[in-house]
Amino acid sequence: MDLWDVLLLFGVGIISGIINTLAGGGSLLTLPVLIFLGLSPNVANATNRIGVFFNGVFAIRGYMSKGLQISKYSYWLGLAAFPGAFLGAILAAKIEGALFNKILAAAILVIVAYMLFGPKSFDHAGERTDRKTNAIGLVIFFFIGLYGGFIQAGVGYLIMAALSMVNRFSLLKTNAAKAVSVLIYTLASLIVFIYYGIINWELGIALAVGNSLGGWLTSRWSVGANERWIRYFVMITAIAFAIKLFFF
Image (cartoon, rainbow, N blue to C red):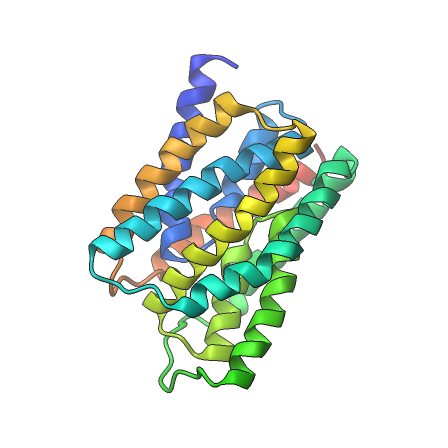
């Protein structure tokens, strides 16, 4: 990989970090870019998790620097997703490349459809934190972890939908819980991918630096921010990537 590839991944990482912190869907961009740079799909999928992990670390630090308290439930959600992500990552490490590209293209189109026709706001009144509701959330997050461990792309919107519909969290609290839970279950994915030796560390670190910068900066000024403006950019770009992936 040459210097231009590294610089491209750094720039894409910044954009992805901003997108992931405000709403979700950064991997809809970074994962196809890694594949188009010549990485095999499973290596691209594994390498992408370096950026995802460090984006979570710096996003959480950014939220905490603004005085936001991370709830204990957010950590439990991450722990519930952890075993699912472990299983999903094993599947991702073994899947055939052409099939993965088509699954990724289909996943991108499904997530884009949700972005287009799903709820435009995740803010609700009347937060639910009773035991039954929290237990349902933990079960849902196991399956979110399974998807996240396998493919990651668009998982932020699944998390936001779950926390909005089940626990009725505010947008800010949802984003903070998303950052924590993704950070925790991404550890499971990284364990698997490191074991299989399929991470391109050079590009992964370049992506991680960009992700970290974008996540940290955005988390510091995203309090009260409206994520709608970013939807159209992600949707248009992701659709183009999905078409390319399907015929790649």
